[in-house]
Image 1 (cartoon, rainbow, N blue to C red):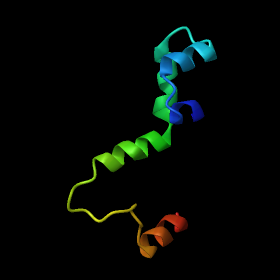
Image 2 (tube, one colour; image 1 turned 135 degrees about the horizontal axis):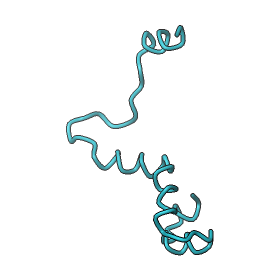
Image 3 (cartoon, rainbow, N blue to C red; image 1 turned 120 degrees about the vertical axis):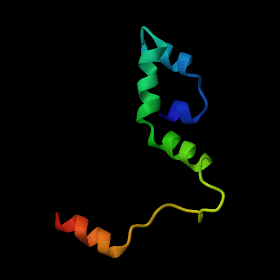
Length: 66
């Protein structure tokens, strides 16, 4: 993950890890939550408030009671 964040190409990472195919390395891209969050931040609607969703206390209490 650190290599991905540093901008190292996935083909280089695949070679270092000894993967037979670059497709195998794609698994790491799907597992990286930081990359997913960055992608979601790019799709934020123009009129929405900035920041992450904060669930109301009632919802948290309900979920904790499950």
